[in-house]
Length: 147
Image (cartoon, rainbow, N blue to C red; front, top):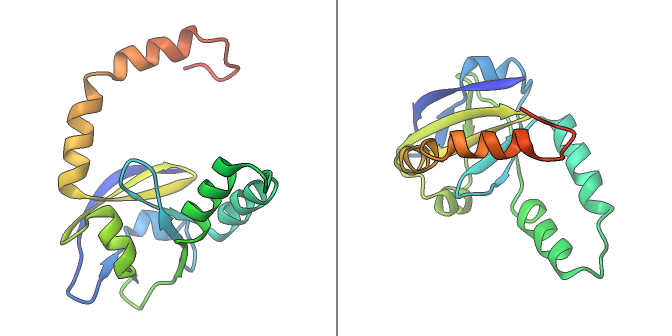
């Protein structure tokens, strides 16, 4: 399971070191793509293949299905580690996530999110205040997954 937060710096060539803890799970690299809420998603190859299969099963006739598939698949880039454990983040993904120098890596179960550290701080401050309310709503829902 991918969990935890780590701070790293992007270099002038668009490279950033992936935390060692995450590299041990994302062996060899992975797939980096646009994520939700203004971050990037980094998936292992196996997890990515499962997600891509689910997207392939969405109806081609559904406008939202086509748009979401384009959003994730159309911006995906295979990334691998150099000898220092760095990946090169394509400029279009850096621009999307507004990452300039400081990068926050956040492990979220089956993926790693890459955030502009400034954007991550704003996101956390906004959502920490709502965490108790969201947890209560999730525990009271009829969902089979309860907290």
